[in-house]
Length: 247
Image (cartoon, rainbow, N blue to C red; front, side, top):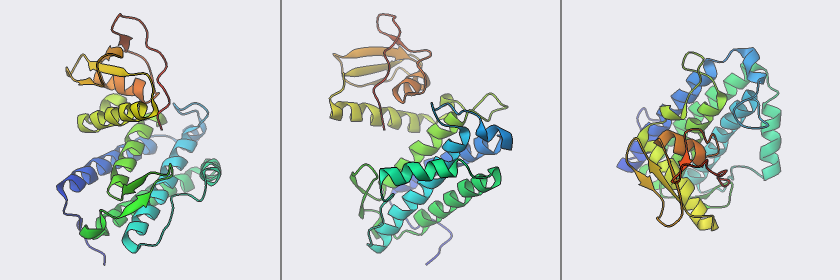
């Protein structure tokens, strides 16, 4: 059944849906502000053009839609058949014409949003499997997508009167959750302990006893996600090390 409003009733899910929709609008704006000829130029991700980023985000929406369909129907539909298939899909997508690439981005995002909107309340706890093999409730897919659209909008290097979308533009609620995600993953993998101290918000993330890094929250987020180390120093005033890999 198709409805005009979200069928979800869980307040946390509804909050996450608001965040992901804001993020999708942010990404779409950044993509739309790029001229067609600029799509072939390098993005802020090493080895990827802006077209690669746009293709990845578009195909990611389709992959997450498959997980939502899995939750609704109970029929297993993985995000990707294999890691190599995912890589090949992105490489192919990067060769699409600008018009086709923009259509992919818009259409895939709308289809995913409709799938979330129409998912019955009792299906939001259904379990699905991510591309990395994690078993999660389908409600987790909203956050998975939120990370993609906010960070990759910055990676496009466009928007805001050609100065580029910035990590500073990511809402505080999303930034805090992203930092928490990264640090939790590092702990689970046994990486060096890190404590991030925000000089602008007076927040601190991570456990004491490890490497202390200081900077504005946006700068610390950029460092933790491998985007930039600008504006980040150790507690002793030295330059920070390269952040461990994240996703």
